[in-house]
Length: 434
Image 1 (cartoon, rainbow, N blue to C red):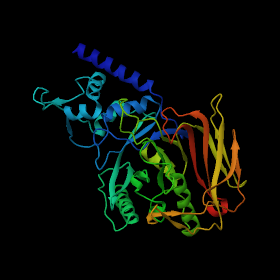
Image 2: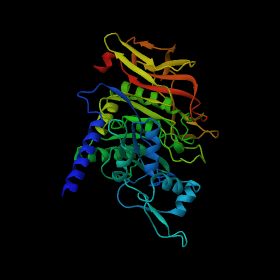
Image 3: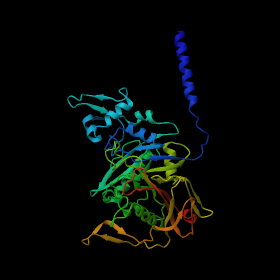
Image 4: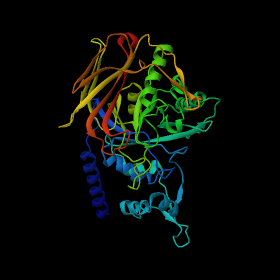
């Protein structure tokens, strides 16, 4: 009996020590920047590593939140995968690394390599999050890449903080397909009481979505202005607008013609590859920095819906100050020694000509749904070197956004992402906001 009492006492003391070693939750904490990625793939769909391994990579590389967004599936329930398929997809690296990292007590297998029946169980989010989450430091969020199409044009929409699987939706136009997906997500959000964020993925992938396809879908407030996959054509081409130009077309149409709030731009990895065999879609290329008080799905999503975030491939910002009384937008850059910074303030002025012309191919045929607009739609209004970078509104702007480009190379460069950048969300003059 005395042994039992002593053991219980020791356990209680250990638990008390552990609890006291964790800093208490502050009362009404200050705003802080949280770094996160909202577009990530695992073995649950077409990624080439285990979700718990991927989550640990992001946590160990100073991310604060991560949404796993596999195609048309949630990481829920039972899912087993053949080791042969794991070896094939990962070049033979993934299973050994997984076993070495977490051990036989965690890694569940069945069958045998001898007769090619060996399988490993993929852990669901609710199970492995206990290994990787850290209160106030790192958070996992359930996501899904709702993967559909219209006339073979890919239409992929990420949904973050889902509680149930949302299947792809049909429609008679690309615009209708997008709207139907968003309405299905919104119905789930209302029924469940969840705070959910949707964003349109890589619109130029397969030339799937044009600015005109979703400018009028006012239910959508977010899209990927930058995606780290090397095949999604962020920069467009001679016949297709870049994602940045699309951003300006959409916001000009929304504000000037539809009296609607602007679209926000995010950056993501769209990571699939984690073993160094390919640089097509690797982690660490694009993320969002969200200013919030709490590291919770609700706080992060509400802050993003309010526009309190920026997108980045490496440039960090100390503060973004929008002064409605002074009519100014000030961007304070967290500078690196020996690095130069150029900020371009980009926007569209009132009264812009929004007529557009179809884009024709070499044979004179119209390229599907692609239009060419005036250069005054999304032009550079001002360029500033150094920090702070300040833009003073004249009152004639429909909106102003900013892109900061540094002379420092990105950590994982490719043709469309050689130098570190950051994108600041569009701001409207005070009169327009009112």
